[in-house]
Length: 124
Image (cartoon, rainbow, N blue to C red; front, side, top):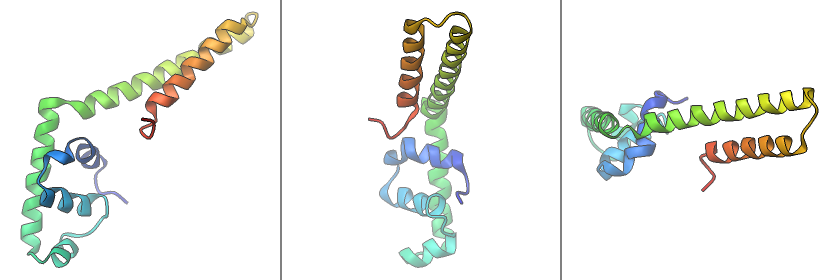
């Protein structure tokens, strides 16, 4: 299980801005759930060296988010899409109660489909 989902999100957004070593260490630690000792043994450095590299990387990722705010914006957009989709479902329910307009039904289904496509991180 992941240690910290916030840090994983930061790594996804800003990981390419770290050094290769920092990115690898933080990826091993958060995504692969390896301990500091396991990482140190695998790469041939001390546990303290791994810890220092991870702490520096965490600080850099946090600073990048504070400056750029991409993760916060992404989460806001994701929540907005969920709200739009929910409102479209409500409109469709009211449409069913009040005389079923085929056009309203088709439009709300299209809105919900667009929201689902935009919210899916695998869609590119």
